[in-house]
Amino acid sequence: MNEISISLMHPPLVRDIGHGMTVEGNIRHPDRTLDTFHVFLYVSHGSIQIFEDGIEYRLEQGNALFLKRGIPHFGGSPYDPGTTWSFIHFYDQTPSQSTDTTAEYSIYPPKYILPIETYAVHMTLPKFITVANPHIVELQIKNMLKTFETPHPLKPLKLTTLTLELFGDLYLGQADKRRETKTHRIVNRMIDLLREACPHKLTGQEIGDALAMNPAYLSSIFCKQTGKSVTQFQSELLIGTAIEMFRNTAKSISEVSDMLDFPNPFYFSRVFKKVTGISPSVFLNETYRQSDMGKPDQSSPEPLNT
Image (cartoon, rainbow, N blue to C red; front, side, top):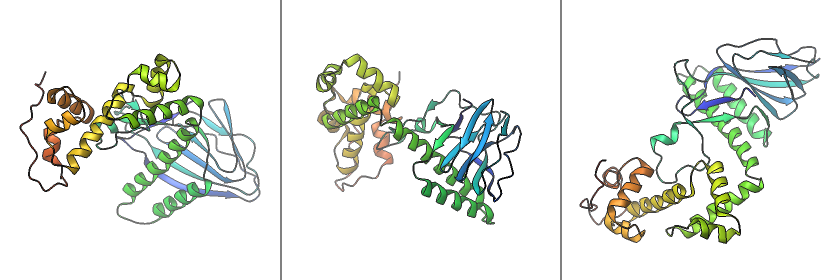
């Protein structure tokens, strides 16, 4: 469907932004192929018909459409009288950069620390969107138009931030709609179970018994919807609890490991590093602790580099 993916490492870069209106409705969308930038089109009133790669899209009030660079598109019937619209032309990345090896963005990010891998993802934007809150989107676009028209020295940076926020909100809005499906409701129930059980780790059978469903099926849909295995998600919950304990107490690595029922500090350190990208001792050295009971114990063993 010629969808557009935005890498968080290389956010959308605005080329130009504009607003249009036709009183008589005697114009059509232009026939063109844009080689260097994409188009975001939003209709606030009226109707616009567009064809891209042989597929028809009709935008009514509150509809948005992404048109991909390199793909021919053209207008169909004339705009309805009184139609008003806004557009954003934006670059996604330089030709030498690619998001092919990155994962799709997860709406279930780690809670307490964001490893660099969290950002090595992309958002596949919905092609056609029926906006849930048109008033909010129109305010965002209005703010972007105002920013674009000012000579602010940080205009490119501000526009990039505002555009990523707008696209992110639209992406999340579509994700919220998907979460209304039966599968997502089941996954959300699983997440509630896992959070309530933490620090106890539930087995697949325990989860299946609690929901009266097949454990293998639950594991499959959980991974598909969250991008993580149940085991990985539970590890993140445990390490999130450990981070909270490190920040708010003076407990050592060994003490936290014992309290969270890890078999030994070596294994705890290995899981901690797998989840966060750093060892617990490095985290303690880099983190301000609320407790004034002295420096944390750095004597707990760390896993060997293997």
